[in-house]
Length: 275
Ligand SMILES: [Zn+2]
Image (cartoon, rainbow, N blue to C red; front, side, top):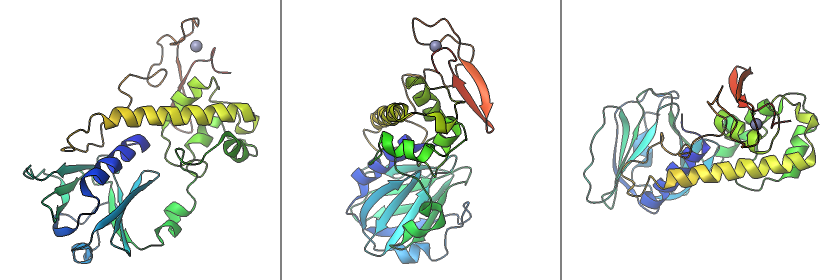
């Protein structure tokens, strides 16, 4: 499933290829995504210019002209395929929507499993339920003091708190496991036991990991031919994630990585290094 760094990478790829261009033609092949595409989708977007692209959590917000936004979520298997001027559109079996831009660029939303969403909203899109309660963007203004504040009255584990979208937006299981390892914090600790200093370390490591992942995703996107949602996971491998039974990457540690289940999700950590 595309995570925050992959979605950010897709957004950047789309921005480079599509900003300032207008839709001259489009085709909806299939309307029945997780939220059905509205029947008047094409009619409302025809001729509109893509003026701005932003990301909120795992959603891409495409500003179309002054008053409409198209909101895109990749679901489990969604991807955006971009065909720059001079490269012919190659239809894929699960291209649900195909956009032709006025300069000859073409892009398609492909989603074999159809858990994605593509729907229209207006300038007040942030007021919708799914955005109104979403926590801070980890790459924006987010400090250790902010995190400490949101943890200090919580009894849930720090692992669960970091996955809670109301605390911080868009973090997935991999990034949380890796950040807790880098900060040497045991994932089973109660959120309200995390000190200000530890919260500061966690924020730093979460941001570092996301930036590293965005960088590795970005490097695979040079020609934008395939803005591929499946790329961009750390290409250098994980320290703890999916490494149960393997030795801890810290040279002076003799322990193996453990796997436990917290709130139905696997947690990987080193019980010697993470206190
Ligand atoms: Zn260790």
